[in-house]
Length: 133
Image (cartoon, rainbow, N blue to C red; front, side, top):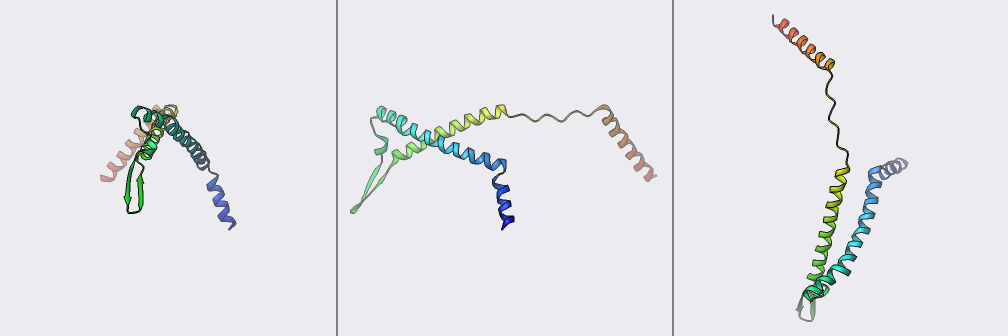
């Protein structure tokens, strides 16, 4: 059991796991912010333009005494939230990729390394030719 707990601790405290947890917390907070923006500013603005409250847009179907309401307006709000989040994430990744260090190309071989390789090839060819004869 102790070994299991040690393995779990090593896994949970890896740099990537901690970074991912922080990212999830920030993403959750940002998602709440975007949802608030959509519900309190964008949806009322759309409602003002089209003279409709998005929360009440939908299809009401009655089944005998029961009634079902399909809230299309709520779905539209969720789509708007998704588009805003996707756009912000896209912009963030574009900026983050600019600051990523590009890997340096491997250093060019020195003259001595090239000559050593040529010499090794010549020796290999001489051995092969001498074995044939």
